[in-house]
Image 1 (spheres, protein in one colour):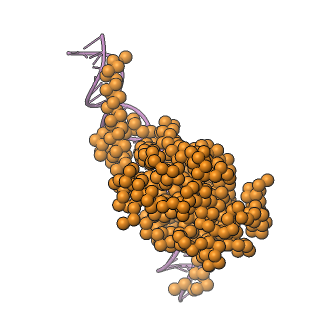
Image 2 (tube, chains in turn brown, red, blue, orange):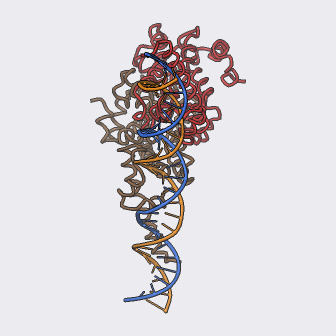
Image 3 (spheres, chains in turn purple, green, red, brown):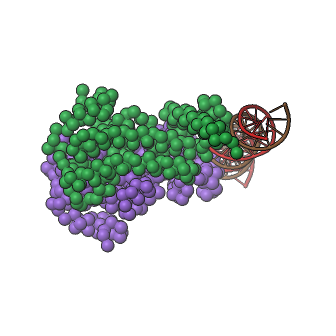
Length: 245
Length: 245
DNA sequence: TCAAGAAAATGACCGTCAGTCAAAAATCCA
DNA sequence: TGGATTTTTGACTGACGGTCATTTTCTTGA
């Protein structure tokens, strides 16, 4: 058996190489999508052979899922930062809404990867460990919003009925995902005369929050001021596209 | 030059063969998804050669897009039927909401095809004609809902501000698509304890309609009775899964 | 320092499949 | 009927994901 000190270094090296592979894979995904590159090209880029790639990932899909999970964790990070905003529960919910826009702006390529994950035979080609890791990352996002909504109900900011906290969470996630999907659709944007898709996402989130009766309602509070605070306190570098000029 | 009568028959035969191909392709898509069948298998199924398939469709993606457009037109048919419901504008909107559920129930496999269309390099492999046909089918769905919302605003059922009819349409489409996407996500369903995804779709649609201030609001009207009427008058065979037992 | 054994890296090779095209078959027309 | 035209065919090509026998590198103990 190998000395513990040696095997630890090896493990570290292995982890570093995996990161290297993921970095390059992510770049290729952003630049070319899924089809327009192959494992040989990735191998050349990272300066290892194809066989070595397959020691880290069981398939191309498995690799892409790993990239997706890493980016999804970045989203969860943003959500958790947003949730730390000091204000009413609805303001905290709004901060998460802004976080989803910051994320979309920082990772515009991720949208297509996410759509890919929902389609096709992606999941049956991925390894169980990666699937679980992805589920965990998704759960982080879910939980962050869910906790705020539970607080909102407990504090009386949101009426108890007729929706459970779980369903309110799902509604907000649904409108956010749906708005992003529709916002990417070129034709619909033309029909609806939408030039700033992220603005539509936020308007739609407001709509659902009001529909849920989440107080203070849109017309009861100056949310433009809230947005100012959220941006300056949490996403200072995102002011350019989140706040009206 | 060939006689007109002959070339007409040929055109008809060609069209019939295209339908045959589309029927079988659709079956394969429903049974196996996109990857797990190939053009050779389809050729055997329709009893023509692979080369003949490529006289109708420029690529596998082109063929799948044609299938998708055909199904999307079926959805537009349902929407137009729903829009003919006699009632308030919000009731008509609700009828379209139910139509989207009827569609999801009749074509459960279509969801994955639609997601595929949003991802990857699908569009660059499809022919311009098929892309345009698909855009037309999408526009039919959009327009049906849009017209009702324009009426709603004109009649004062929906406040003029702060959302345009276009944006209200987009919001309802977004919540519908988003709810379907989330409803398909197994993990989220477990988290949220959702056993009937279609019910969530409808609840979320209600949420947005209320958020839009579309009168009569949910608590101002007995929509269970409306649902009864919509189902009996427009979707009589869908009572089993649309109405509470 | 070295040799033997263990572990890791490699890339030639395999099977599959979308898409092509020259040859064959079918159809048309004078 | 036979030659010209159109349509159909399926063998072939190139590309790619994935494998595994061979080679290279590293570890260990004397």
